[in-house]
Image (cartoon, rainbow, N blue to C red; front, side):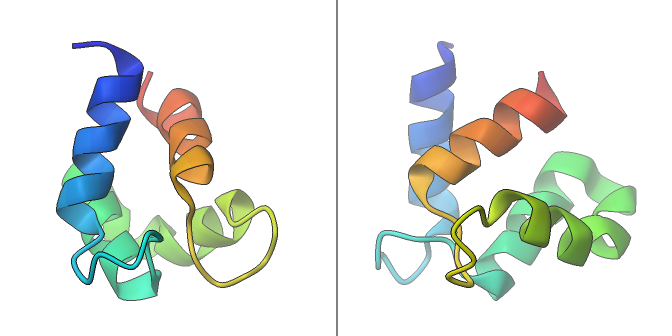
Length: 72
């Protein structure tokens, strides 16, 4: 699966309220899924790191950067 397709699918699944961003609670679920046991403890730090514009949400582009940095 290509990276953009994977990010699109992740975003679709974890943007539960379909508002076009991943909020903090959705982000916790995403990180838990990607990192499993280590996820919950790392969420706040990771969220702050990838919320580049500090709007308290993760855009699709910010998610793409996160996936490249953390998962690949």
